[in-house]
Amino acid sequence: MERGAGARLLLLLLLWAACCWHARAVGSSRYTITVTNGGPWGDWAWPEMCPDGLFTIGFSIKVEAPQGIPGDDTAMNGIRLYCSHGRTVESESGRWGAWSEPQWCPRGGFLVAFSLRVEAPKTLGDNTGANNVRFRCSDGTELEGPGLAWGDFGKWSEACPKGICGAQTKVQASRGLLDDTALNDVRFFCCSS
Image (cartoon, rainbow, N blue to C red):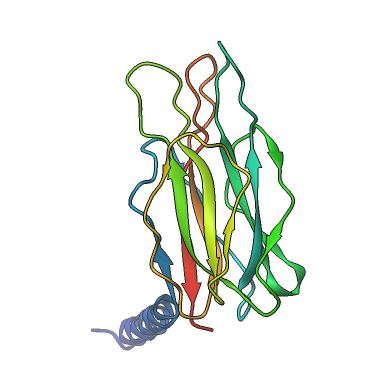
């Protein structure tokens, strides 16, 4: 092997090792919490995170009011998280509805777990996917969004030891004249620092 090729190979190995060590270090400080009853439609969007060291202290949801017959209901279209120190994070949201007023954990508290209200898929009729969300704060307080009542709340997710620090949503894009469901599922990130 030529001397220049050996140096390039060594440099590539060092860069690869640094990259993999950084990915492992970042991956070990953040993991997701999920629920088992999320809706089946849509694609996972990009994750959105609070700045390092910050956790979520409140939330609001984007909800489309009932459309009546023969309207197409989508119910909950988005979830916005409020990080401590004023920053908001929001993964992809559906296009319908309006944002609710924020709800907050009691002073000094963080969002640590969630439960999702989802309407089971129907063969005939109007499907909606996710309809509402509940959060549990670090002091045990439970906050419920002003979503719609279709479907059932599933089991609570596991709790983050230090708090939720980001979100990733599963949203069905607009389907034109076909049945739309918008937000179907969400997973939240726990951070250790």
